[in-house]
Each structure stands twice: as C-alpha cells, then as structure tokens.
Length: 493
Image 1 (cartoon, rainbow, N blue to C red):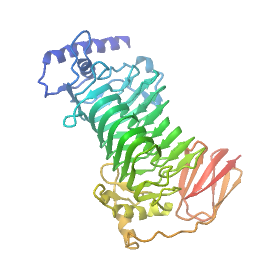
Image 2 (image 1 turned 135 degrees about the horizontal axis):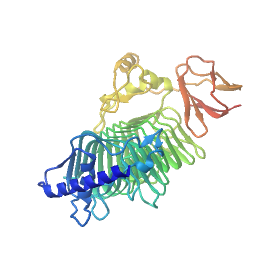
Image 3 (image 1 turned 135 degrees about the vertical axis):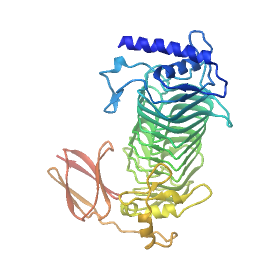
Image 4 (image 1 turned 120 degrees about the vertical axis):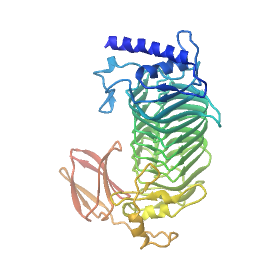
C-alpha cells in the first residue's frame, strides 16, 4: 500500500506543476477529474515547496472522485483499513485561506479522510464579498471521516471560517465528524465574523463534539447565518447540540427546513439550535421531528436564548423532547417575549400563542391544513402537504414529498381556519407491567404510543388502535411510555 501512496503523491506533484503551468485566466476554473488532480488543486491553492499560493482559484469537478474506499463501516471509522487511508490535504490554510470558488456539478467525492489541523475538505476560509462570496456549489461528499484531538480546533466540511462571505448550495455531506476538544459541524466547524448563506443542502453525518455540535455549524460565533430549503438527518452529540447549529450568535434564520435526527447534549439541546447568544433567531415554515435530549435543558427548536428577538412562523414540533433536570419544552424554555404565529406542538410548551395538537391531528392532516392556509410576507404556506402514509406534514420544496389528499379531506370538515381551539379532556392513562408485557389502558385511539429508554432514545413507536391493549418489550430495563402528552415511567424485569 505504501507504493500506492507514493504513486499518488508523485502523480499529485506532477499534476500540481501542470496546474501551475496552465495559468488560466482568473475567471476560468481548473477542471478536476481524478484524485491526483484534486490533491493538486489543494496544493495549488495553498502553495507548497516554495511555490506561489492561489487562494482565489476556481476548481470544478468533471467526474466522481474516490479518495479512499470503505472509510466508514457501521457508522464509525473502519479501523481495519485506517492505516492505509490517504490523508487529505485540506483546501485553504491559515496563511493562505481559501477565498475562491468550487463547483461540484453534481459529482461525488468519496472517502475523505482528514485528521490534521483544521480537518475538513476546506480547512481555512476567509474573504469574499457580499456581491462575490466564496462559493461552494452542487457537491456530494460521502464516506467521510474528519477528526481532531487538538484543543479548540474545529472540524467540518469547512473547518474554520473567519471574516468571510460564503455561499453553500446544493451540498450534501455524510460520514463522521469528531472534535475531541472543540466544535464540530457537518458543513462548518466554527464561523467567526461570517455571513453564510446555505441553501438546498443536507447533513447526514454523525457529529460528535466536546463543545458545540451542529448538523450544519458547530459554533457560529458572530455574523449572519441564513439556512433555507435544507435538512439535517445526522445524529448530533455535544455539550451544546443542535440539529443545525450547536451555539449561535448574532442573526440566525431558517426557512423551509427541518431536522429529523437524534440530538443529545449535556447542557443545551435543540432541534435546530442548541443555544442562542445575544442574537436574533427566526424559524419560518420549518419543523422538527427528531428526538431531543439533554441532561440540563432541551427544546424542540432551541433550548434557550440569552437575549434577542425570537420569531416562529408557521412551524411545528412533533419530536419528543426530554431533560433530566428541567422541564423540557417542545418549542423553547421561555414563555413570553416570543413572536409565535401559527406554531404547533404535540407535547408540552409554555410559549404564549403556541397551539397544542394531539397526535391524531398530525396524522390526519389537521395540522397540515392549518400550515398550508397560512401565508405572510416571509412565509408561503402553500408548500405544505401530507401524503396518505405520512404521520406529519412535510414540505414540497425539495425537502419533502407532497400530496394534498389529506388536506382536501380535512377542509370539508374544517372551513374556519380561525376557529377557537377546543379543550379536549384526555382519558387517564394506565400502564402496568406483567413480566415483559406492558398492559396499557385508557389510551386514545388514533394517537401515538412511543417508548423511550432513559437516555431519551426511541425504542419503538406505533399508532394506538384500541383503548386497552398490550405491548411485548424486547428486554428488561427502565422505560418512558408516552401516549400523546401523557408519560409514564415503568420498570420491566
């Protein structure tokens, strides 16, 4: 294997000289069609062996590229092959931060393996302007492993962004990102003084951070962050953990986006943002259906904000939210000074004007109809809908598949979208244990039964078909049994 490594390094050197000799006009892009050429582009941007750096260079893929094979197996590093993996040399270093353009044209990069300082496909980025930002577009990065053990060093597809205007669009990232002592993010590890516009993108990577962990940005310290038409499906673990952002400062805005992944933290966990600091946050036409758990404080959208305006418009939480120490809130752990318009939840929330709905209302299309009927200057409700086999509403803007059948059926029975919410008396839930069998009585037909372990991890979920029924448990342990908003703790021996 060492021969293969040496061969690639030698080929990389030749390709780098080719890049240097081509001297394309500034407005043109280098075409990259092989692993050797991709390594060479990195070296061309950064400068090496006393050659000139070209941080504003433009590169574009003309083919799918495999750097390593089978890097991730069963959601973790393939240790049997790790010694043979070729280390990626990230694009952009501290002395020559990347400020150019990278176009993927829908191609894939597989097997990214980076464990050096500022691990990421891009290491250090800075520069750009509002009119001409750093641009990363139309790229799929799969089977990736990014890890750092260094103190305060972040990890992510873009490891570190500072004093930058950056645009990321149509980028999908999957694999495993670990920061043993700092922040980790699927798309950006840490951002300082950055204006970032992220659209039509996805994180599917598992994120593990000692400090801040986020599906899109681990720690967004200062600047403005705009996320639209995007989603997170990668589980997030950290002291501050969020489906999109672990810790956020200044302005953060979400539009037409969702989280559907498990979020776990020690201090603050949120379906979208772990905690907001001195900032303005807005959640528009978005939803969380992932389980959110924190030892200290948990919220369906964000656990907490230190200060600043918070706006929620046409959104819902249908994910389960748990906390060991404090009462978990389906929205945020604050009750007032929040603009909440057409906001729905299924469990508990103290947010004024937020509307609680039973699971059956999510299943049947009731909530979907309410979301679809709402529009204002920032929100287009018409993109909401629900397919016959969906348990909750989804978006039709590239992050969900739509059918209007449930909505049209419901509208025949619900014509006044401003109707007064009625108080429903819930039957008292009883859960008894007989061996490995749970005997449940007083459940609401059409609701959802969900069983969690004591870490907040979902064991299974199903619809309730009868008022009284029984469920066989797979093994002994302590569990939380939830039917709609009623929760019981049981010990199965």
